[in-house]
Image (cartoon, rainbow, N blue to C red):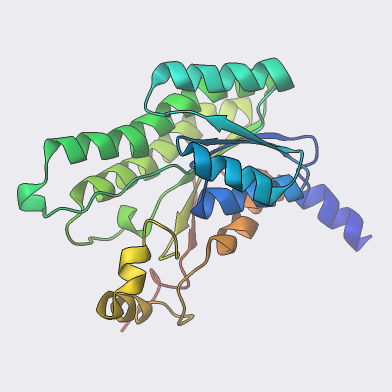
Length: 258
């Protein structure tokens, strides 16, 4: 009985998923978890060598690489077209791809701002828009946007990242409202400090590492694998009555008091 319940709640068998930024880090871990739970997963990334290495590492016929630049609308249309042609539907979208360009606010460059906005917010909206058109036909689907503590709190020298992730947080709520009538759920998965290529500079800096560690209740930085369970939860029937929400996976950072 217990195994039947778990299967009915958390299985992704027969589901078709797209995960962006899946060549490494959080996206790679989420894609691996989805494929292990039975989903056919299209791993999207611009980093060709990393992506192909990840496909070999996952070693699951359900994991399929798509090399693309998500800031290019033609590429986004091609991704969705490829998946629909091959699978006839899309059940899950994870907008994980993101960049972080650190510069002081008082001298932050327009180029850095535009690049961050294009990847972190605009691409997520455009891909959600394209995918949701097919989810609407099926009258179901799950969209998961990967935000950040930066969507909630002020961090130094990265205004574009904070603005784009804050915008993504609110985009999720707007999409949740608009798409609920089609039984499409849209939620945020909000990582804290996770050890990835994006955060490795802070991780390797003794002072920054200690400063961040002191904010984490569990007294350790997160690993990409810490996001897998929460992502499966938001993608599966276990969360079928949840939409427009923020699920924090931050080791207690946001909730910590003095």
